[in-house]
Length: 68
Image 1 (cartoon, rainbow, N blue to C red):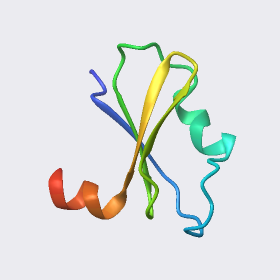
Image 2 (tube, rainbow, N blue to C red; image 1 turned 120 degrees about the vertical axis):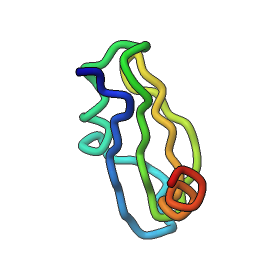
Image 3 (spheres, one colour; image 1 turned 180 degrees about the horizontal axis):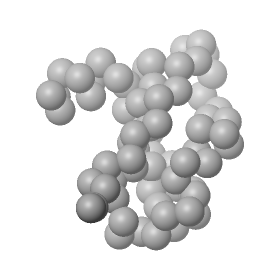
């Protein structure tokens, strides 16, 4: 079995732009080529890296509209 995407969901007040470590912990044990890493948020859109992977943070509405 191959995991194609790892998805974590984080909902916080829209004024908060600092992602807690507990939300990124799901991606820390991965290598760079293992799978796509997504952090679904309420309105924050950015890229961050943890360990060897890059985590794409996108609003959940954008994910639902364009990836369904």
